[in-house]
Amino acid sequence: MRYNIVTYGDPVLRKKATPVLLIDDGIRQLAADMLETMRANRGLGLAAQQIGRTEAICVIDCTPVQDRNARGDALGFGVEMPLILINPSVLVVSGEQVDQEGCLSFPGVFAPVSRADETVVKYLDEFSQEKTITSKGLLSRAVQHEVDHLNGVLFIDRMSPEQRADLSETLKKLAKVHNA
Image (cartoon, rainbow, N blue to C red; front, top):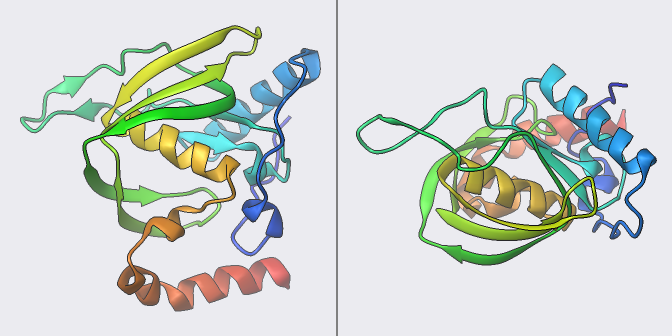
């Protein structure tokens, strides 16, 4: 089942996720539906808030985009995709990267955002197995972006005041469309 993407202005985007206490067929179906919705919208990640839900679950699949090093060489992500992260927690962040970032809940909005270059995240998979992964580059960015969503933090919150000021009219239009 494909969900509609919730856009900026909907209060659910600012809600902190509630932990998933039981990973059952309903949660596994939600994860599958979220992956379908994300792919249909050509995204790399999707958090429950972006479909109007508040469970602590997000999905990520960076395979449509190759991460590259400074020389332009394609890099692997070092983890099997797609990722289904339930109750994720970022344990370690290091380094810095600044790159263009967008969000399915902010259609057409892109801006450079500073994120950690490397993250270590702990989560449960769809079979209740506790896992820990280290991610770098684009995958690290995606993990941080989606975990932020689960905490009610939006990528515009990571922008400089000047960047937000430059986008103020666009953000007002998005909020107005939602509240219409």
